Length: 250
Image (cartoon, rainbow, N blue to C red):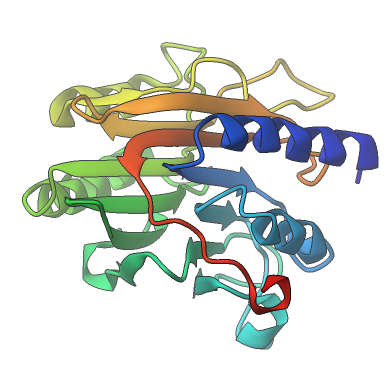
């Protein structure tokens, strides 16, 4: 883990947070195993730099207790696969009116769906990890069925995660582009998010929003935590409750 990149990431988020302290920040990172990286995530959340955070490829199972990954003042939800691959964790500020909606999660695409009431609006946030081995037909069927249910219940919705479609290549991203066209979604991440030594940079980590969603700032930069993936986030134009000082600060 690169300490310099990690510190730069936190400084960048700090500057952004200082500019728009009342706006919700929703972030995502393909962490590629949380076991030995949790302290960095815990520190990020303790600094109140992200309000909703999704992590994918957590690579844990039921043998890892919830207490190992809890963070004070945040609610946590898990969707584990196994210790070798996959899995998701979601963290949401505990003072937000939020709840997991398992009935609105994808059947086979790994996901965690969260309803949150912010100001006078109800939002649906969905963290996603699509395994590279999933076929286009399988993905399309799951998306169509699930997104249909979500948009029938919510006016504001965000799908954030590693879709494993390279949006820098029109041919290789034809399926996700078709899904966006069908459901009037826009991807707001435009530059590469995945960097390996053996291939060209790719844009796999996406934030898909309905076109009416209003946002202010987007982040897309390396963290020193994930092996090859950037952290991505969006700052929404909606008012948050003020963070109460911790007991030790009073």
